[in-house]
Length: 117
Image (cartoon, rainbow, N blue to C red; front, side, top):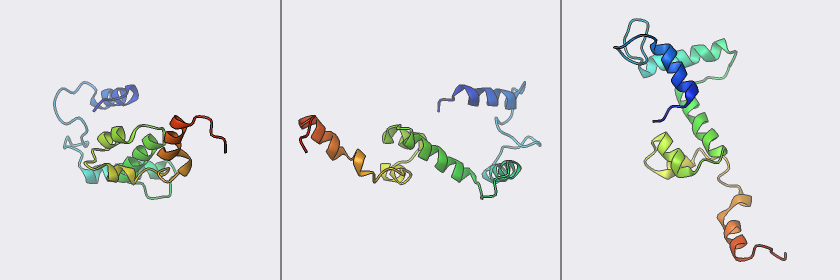
């Protein structure tokens, strides 16, 4: 998966001068597991004053929704989310039922770019 510059820089800080071990590890050198990550996310949310329960999955959900809202094509977001079925990704699309962006209107404009109605 490609890493944007801020993510790469953050990983460089986390890794530091280490040349062995896990990229993301606990203070004892063990690999972070899903339980460690869930606790870490909850602790960061609490420190930020967020009272709503935040989990790694809610961050994933937000990333997928934000990508769709930004106009990233569904098949690209599907790959990003590693969803086998596009219907799974489609559930995250909050604008899926917006009729003003329905394909029927785009097709109609292709055949009659200046409708008279």
